[in-house]
Image (tube, rainbow over all chains, first blue to last red; front, side, top):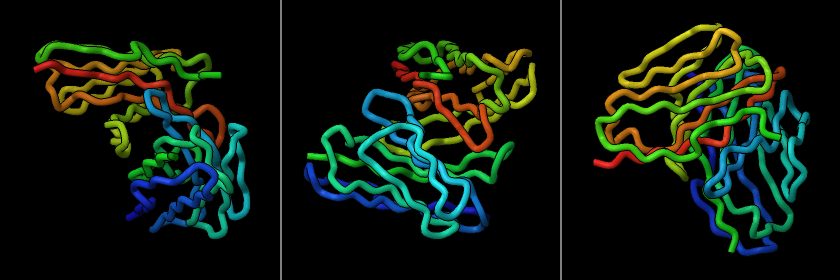
Length: 112
Length: 110
């Protein structure tokens, strides 16, 4: 069966520090991968999606970037965190159009 | 822009009461998903609707997709404190893109 792993679960980082959140999927190949963010009191916002290795599409201009170095690995990064980057980050995967979406357990990021 | 509009934004109901959450799209939906989330935790998949007029139920939660596939409602019967949380509708519009509504925060008073 397919599983999705996201880590760390919680993270407290100072302003200006770098960020790296990792998401990996098991049990499937060539998944579509997604990064979402939920700011406190707001809905989920699509940040990035990827349909293959090295293929990244950005939905919202921001202080973040994403990379997909391997088929089942999706990384969310920042060179210098801002206070506004605080929130709850969710990784998700899908088998493609018409398939369901499975979400990781999320990472709560607090920038101080 | 927000493709999916959810209403109400928040809801407080007395335990045992029924409630409805709506999700409206400006475009035809290829698939409509309902999730439940407690803030800071992962999403719990509730159900998925794909066909116009489709209705699905899980325990005391029922979701419907209208014939035009542009609106869905989530109905909870005899609400319980365990139903409290944030309910999110999500939809597929274009190939490979999945969007969420703004969410509805539900509190159930015992």
